[in-house]
Image 1 (cartoon, one colour):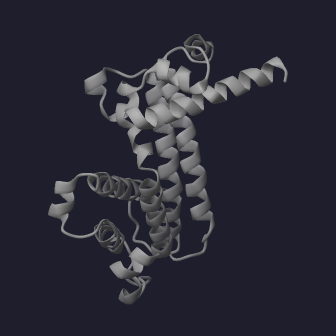
Image 2 (cartoon, rainbow, N blue to C red; image 1 turned 60 degrees about the horizontal axis):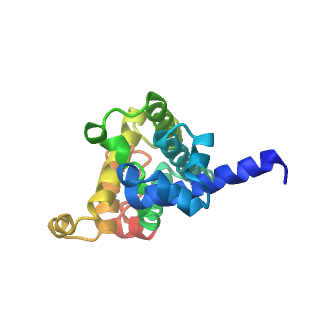
Amino acid sequence: MNQEERRSESRKKIVDAAREIFFREDFMGANLDDVARLAGLSKGSIYRYFNNKAGLYLSVVGETGREYTAALTEVVKSDPEGHVLTRVRALSRFQLDYWSLHPDHLRVFWALDNESVIGDLPPEMVDSVEQAWRRNLAIGQRVLDDGVERGELLDVDTWNLIHTFWVLQTALIEQDTTRIRRRVRGRSLEEAYFGAVEVLVRGALHPDHALPASECSVAVLAKA
């Protein structure tokens, strides 16, 4: 193994270890000593590849984002000619399944929502995550744009609509972690989630191209 290969392997060990620590402890709780111990390297080794914890955090967020983007892209590519509601349904199912299977991934974004607690984050970190977020939303936006072009959707602001989907879906998923909110909601996450998706997308469907009501029920969405 040459020097470049050794450096690449060491960097991967650090990022893999940091990912586990950040997912478990979030940004504030993560300790670089723990990262080094888990990676089987010295703490000084981390600084050969990353200037500080923020830089390491950015690398972990970037890697997580790339995995999500790749999976999301595959969902969109699987049914390029499908009705917009069918495709939105698939995107919504992916979103729910992904975060249900990887709840720890949400922890890694804690720092981005809590700058008032930890102070301003490095601009390059914020910019990088913003670009990744916009990239993922743009994938969904293209599905809505197709729906508008085909006449399946009204001529709506597709960026605003996909962002509304994102906010609604992530809020419902995050709230499911709190017992009192589940009790107030009074129904399963899937019922609330897909019911909200149906209401939102039905409001934008063109009346001449809407699917029959039987194909748009919450039960059908939940089984998609």
